[in-house]
Image (cartoon, rainbow, N blue to C red; front, side, top):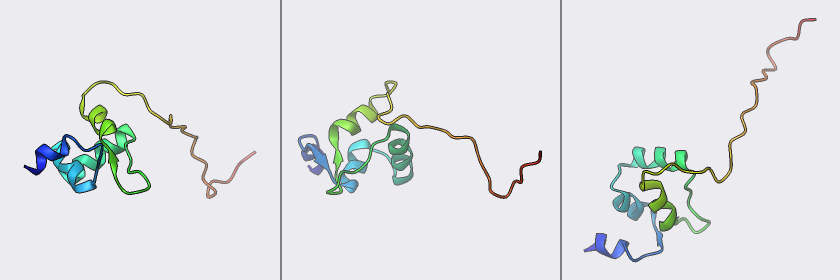
Length: 79
């Protein structure tokens, strides 16, 4: 009965999000990182974001990642 009630809530607690997505904790965390789905300030997940994550369609990053070349302070520059 609880699973049916989750379908009508706009925001889900972390435990409810696991049930809604039918994923284990590790799989859920990995997918959330890949799709940049995060909890809001109140600690809830937006159900629309979870729906997009689970749709299987290609996704567009909200904040594109900028990769910088690795600079190590341990490597000395030789001229």
